Length: 327
Image (cartoon, rainbow, N blue to C red; front, side, top):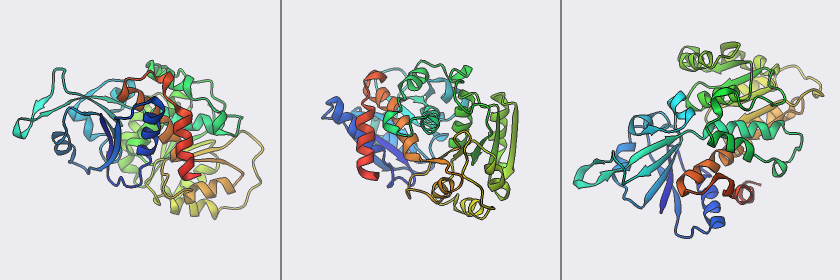
């Protein structure tokens, strides 16, 4: 059986490492998972090239919205956000259409596991353990798998009332807003390179019933982040470097002794990013690279693609495989 991660650019993706580690631990010797460079508008042609040995696709930039017109949203957040990062291919049910040469295009069942990936990464950063190997994401992932995401099921987090920031306004930023909603965050600030283009993210945040929603441009991002307890940067690699430089240029402050201040930078190449380095140096903040989100969003992906119960997915093996490469 074949699976792949699609997007552009895609050569940096660690997804094959995680999925292949899971296949080995599950004894799925015949399963493969690879990268495929697919840009905007390229999904129909890629799907038409597949056969019934293909069962699952992971989707990254710029395909998470585009895929929604090609399948059926099957979990709460793919429905609510109109964004999916996971497609399960059904070659036998109703719906596949005939492509050129008489080949069939599969029916796509679409899911969003990015939201739980962000929630679990932030929960790891907020945990008192200080050691990712001691953090157990399974209760959270089980909740998402059960569809418990729409009612602030996970609102017992430390820092739930803290100031929260999302940097960016695209598909992953919308998943970050959903993650904050699940965590019981009361207010959010969206830092965007173009606040006019952030309107869709602002509208989403308001629909999620945050008590306070505001959008500011990148020029004011450093000052906003100074007061934030939680930050998720959803910008591509290097795009947050100027913001990191602005933070580094602020007046020195004492190391924080209050609640943990956690940054998740979803970019994980280069590792660590400049933003991660600056956040760690300032007030001793906890900063996580995007590989933590990638790990946690892959758990339910593997379960969906292989038909394996979530509680049997070998998270430890996947984590160790990734750490063996990135340290």
